[in-house]
Image (cartoon, rainbow, N blue to C red; front, side):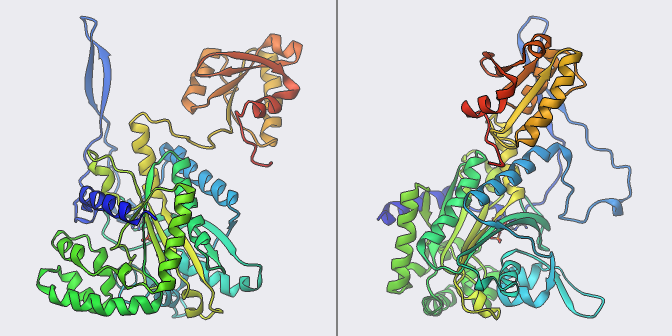
Length: 495
Ligand code: AMP
């Protein structure tokens, strides 16, 4: 077991990744500066800085979106699509069924599940009175709604585990800052009905692979908060400790000490950090069963080669967690502070008491949520650094170029056939120059293009061109799909 090794590594990471993201940064919009390489009159390359045009603000202020909310624009479509496609792919690969629940629910659902004394419930929920006088809330997270749906749709009588995934908007009236919005989107996976270390490990591997497949390298920070009994025992010890250090704590932690003392361990305020570092560690208060369970989760992660670090202060702020808790952070480039200001890409854990607490048969459960705004930001950073990002259906993309009238006609039929067979085919039938079409293919980032000219129309063939090497192969038009598949150039969704 690697706990010692991991603990040592952890200290290093904590030091370097001081959570500056929680500092109350004021966001000021600077014009984006782009660099452009040109050649001067002596023939040497010079780099010019050009300012991107600021959007003109010729509209009244009340036309803008609400604070902390924003439009997602076509220029970012590729990143959002990549995240959504990957979410669907990975969820299906691990057998999670798609589910969608309403955005608006009875506010009591969130209060009962997330818990009073948490920032989400006390400060951040959008709550208002419906027309019939009932109190409703915009969901601040998905787990409570998914649990509600599991109970009210009788999923408890289906074969367990019931595994579901969803993607959608969440709402928290938080202070907007880097990576923190009032409307944001999450990818959620939940597994209901089975308590086993393999279930927790599977969820962690799904979250990790989701990011990894998108080209985002990440590390899982993990801890166990044990059973409710372990947690209650530990909380007594923690409160006594925090009281003894009261004068060193920020005002929020002074309040949290009574309402939700575990939450103090999550505090990002600089002055509280030494107190948190020396606080008693919950792992030392775990009972034999909880410890054994946690070790098993770690063994699975070792086996699955998921990089993780133990983080003894990680408790996650919400009432409903038991045993395993985890968060995932993008691996830090130390020089790049902007990235760390985003905070965790995702987090989750086991919550064995929640279904019972909400009125269902007591049923174990586990899940995670990944924030898509932060994923999109990470993808953009990677792209800016020239990293090759698998944007939109990594292997399924292909470009179709045609030359001449007859080829254009045939191309449409072939494109449609391929599309129906599940291959995503980019094309621009309106363009006639081959050079222009291949430039477009490069812009889309495809690895291969199909080229159909006059000669190929006549002899029933088509060219497959490797866009990197320029190597071309001639294949039978009737066998395009098989040839692409044979060479691993596409994966067919419907198969
Ligand atoms: P949480 O439920 O708070 O653990 O959130 C899970 C993930 O959702 C976080 O790791 C973030 O990626 C994302 N997230 C949470 N709150 C926000 C927010 N206000 N704005 C943007 N993303 C958020």
